[in-house]
Image 1 (tube, protein in one colour):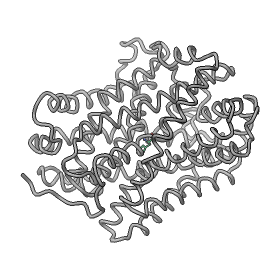
Image 2 (spheres, protein in one colour; image 1 turned 90 degrees about the vertical axis):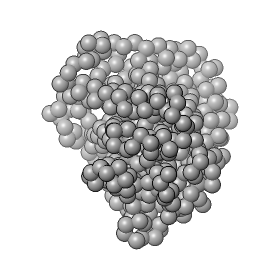
Image 3 (tube, protein in one colour; image 1 turned 180 degrees about the vertical axis):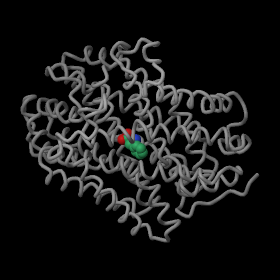
Image 4 (cartoon, protein in one colour; image 1 turned 45 degrees about the vertical axis):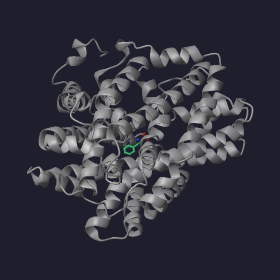
Amino acid sequence: MAEKRKSIHGIWSGRLAFILAATGSAVGLGNIWKFPYIAGENGGGAFVLVYLLCIAVIGIPIMMAEVMLGRRGRRSPVNTMHALAAEAGASRHWHWLGWAGMLAGFLILSYYSVIAGWALAYIFRSAGGVFTGATAEGVSAIFDRLVGDPERLISWHTLFMVMTMLVVARGVRSGLEQAVRYLVPALFVLLLILDGYALASGAFNQGLAFLFTPDFSKISANGVLIAMGHAFFTLSLGMGAIMVYGSYLPDRTSIARTSVTIALLDTLVALLAGMAIFPIVFVNGLDPGEGAGLIFKTLPIAFGHMPGGALFGTLFFVLLVFAAWTSSISLIEPAVAWLVENRGMTRVQASVLAGVITWLVGMLTVFSFNSWADFHPLFFVPHFEQATVFDLLDYLTANVMLPLGGLAIALFSVWIMQRNDSVEELDMGDGAAYRLWHFLVRYVTPVAVIIVFLNVTRLVDFGSLLGLAE
Ligand code: PHE
């Protein structure tokens, strides 16, 4: 057995701490803000079904692979890939996977922080009773006013980036771990309260039908790519966040059980959020394809009309901010770990540097909602004519960079890494469970990712073969 490496950044206090941290990374804006609006834009049921399938056959196996690589390498993704490639006698170019992940992390966090800023702003609006008794139009107007004002967006974005840097600077144990312990459970409770409200709203069945009745004529090939991309995004896969968290995982923890637990919790949060939001959409005659403002235009209506709504609303947005916070720290951790390892920086210096860069890139998103709202850089490309800079950043990262990163992780884990090494590191024997994982990662994931990509680039029109829309 190879000599085990040690992480210089410290180690989680145990399996529970890792589950909490990785769940904190996974559960975030992706579940509550993004999942409902992209499900709405892509027709509901069929999209949700594809997404769930992707979580099961692509997401969970890749999560296991990513945790496994991280724990074996015990360093930042760049250095982990370097070390593992050397160990397997493979090309040193594999460390580019770590770099690509760092870049994806910067780009995602740059817009993530702006959206988290909306949630910050909404804490104060709820607490101030702004939504009490508000109509759907009133709530929409409040949202439009917020995103139309770049100065406000910059202030909230700045605050959120400072919060992120503060936690990251404090390090693995004291910073990251403490944050998640009570927040994830509290978020569940609040979502259940919202679901209770939706249940009583009169359109609960309509909401459920929208989410869970698949109609494949409503989803396009591009919709399938978005569902797959979201499976990566929501589980934080394909950019090194889970890899770097895995590098802090104690040696004897079961990677398989942990990954399944995290994926189940994450999926549950997304579905609970969808079940709360769509009934409100239908009761108020709103458009499910409303776009990025969806939850900010729907949930405040519920808070404005339920008893104790100002309190619940405030709490909800506080929890949403916390959920985003525990994700954002994982988005820059790969870069921070690298700066500490290779540039000899302290965690504080590394966090500040990474945070300032991300903050600057965030301006692209800030202006996408106001000054540049009519700037459509790819106006000449079908599907993207109307896309703003924010839309393109989101599309590029979630639907291109993460799936490609995941593909590379899959290929490395089963085609490059020695089989014995993955058996040893996953530590679940060489039985049926290991073989299933190996099969999924070796064949199913790469083939699925490649088919979806080819299909979207229209080189092969599998979509029409499968009877998908367009
Ligand atoms: N999983 C997070 C969410 O759903 C976003 C994220 C993506 C975090 C990639 C880390 C890495 O909100």
